[in-house]
Amino acid sequence: MRPRVRAAALLAAALLAAGCAREAPEHRYSFLAMGTVVELTLHGAPAGLAERAHRALEADFTYMERTWHAWRPGALGRVNTLLATGHWFSAAPSVLPLIVEARALAEASGGLFDPGIGKLIALWGFHGDDPGGERPPPDAARIAALLAARPSILDLEVRGIRVRSRNPEVQLDFGAFAKGLAVDRAVERLRRLGVTSALVNAGGDLRVLGRHGDRPWRIGIRAPRGNGILAALEVADGEAVFTSGDYERYFTWQGRRYHHILDPRTGRPARGLVSVTVVHDDGSEADAAATALFVAGPREWPAVAARLGLTQVLVVDEAGRLQATPALARRLRIVARPAPPLETVPLPAVPEGTAAAPAGGGAP
Amino acid sequence: MSRPLPTPADLVVFALAAVLLAGLHVLAWRQAGAGPVVTARVETPFGTRYLPLDRPGTYRVRGALGESVLEVRGGAVRFVDSPCRAKVCVRAGWVREAGALAACLPNGVVVTLTGPGGAYDAINF
Image (cartoon, rainbow over all chains, first blue to last red; front, top):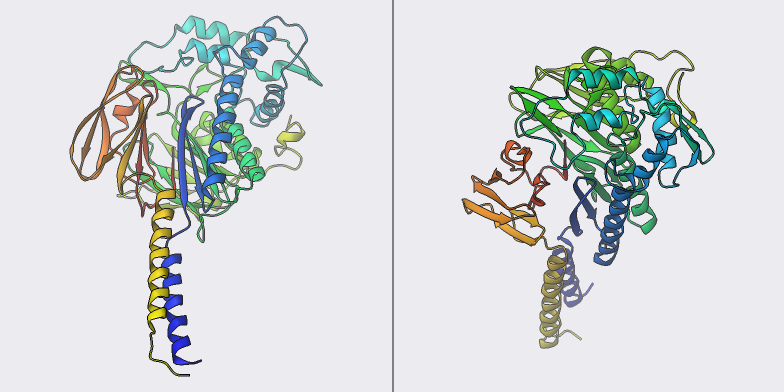
């Protein structure tokens, strides 16, 4: 190569390298929907595609919020009104898939996740945009009366698009499930739009698409008490990370915390754990499972996790101790200082034929 | 065929290339722009504002219900007061990691920390 040409080539290469040194663009959007902040992060997408994705997701989330809202008028509200009649009716196509999928998960979780307890949730005052503050818990007699009726989503009969409730006390509240389904649908929508690298975070519950450029997406799991980050986790393409905690929606009375994760067996806030994190390849299953394991409590959660077909779970108990399944413990990097003790808990083997198969109807 | 290097024409080409690259740089940065570096992006029903975290102080922002009070100190931000009942935002305490978020949903005020070099792309809770 002649000196002049070589010098020009070198300079051009240097200029090009300087031009390429900037990372691919990252676009971040946030909007309020489904009672929380939804964040969309896109990596490497052209600005036009990012804008389109943002607009599509905001519209989708707004629609899903209106349709699945547990206490405002909407498609789910209409379903609840009709359930109370005990008659057969045609369920809205926007609500029917939730009923079918949630029923299967309720069955698989042994009723620990049960969206049929809407009346209990309302009785506890969690139907409202600002349920916190200092107020007394509901009257024990009223809780007992509702419990005696044993409302459950398993009381619903579904034939094609026709639905009826055998129990007039059943009211649906998909609070522990809808966010997961919404995140799943958002990721699916992004895929169809041609997005290859994204993170959808709905109030701390998230799912990722692809990788963040040349590295995986990095997540910090917040410590349930206090401010900092408890653990760092790299999340693979398609994985969802969902956490249920007693700090999300709660009120206090005489120094005691009453949170929104109700145990369908007692009609009261589940005790024993402060947070449950589930990593799974399906957002709606992860969402429902996090609730079921929270209700299951410190002793029962491994058995329920195994039955639900989960492999990656982290729980924090009231004393601040951590337990994780081997598959998740391997991936977690505890960053909190001083580092809390982490116990690895293997999941029990599930007897043949009893593992959860949500789409197919679940275990007896 | 050997001429002195660089020729005036080469210099013009290099200068043009440099200007073009500088222009592209500015364009690319602006495209990805999310306000100044290491800031708290505060979104309210009435618009978005940015608080630089290197300037300690108390800031009042108008929300759907009334005024939320934010404090910036030591590279972190927190809700000091808000007109909601639950005060979840106030109890959430300081937020300091890039990508982290504090919000008073009843008042429609959302604070997100933006900035390069954050350890996390998102915070799960």
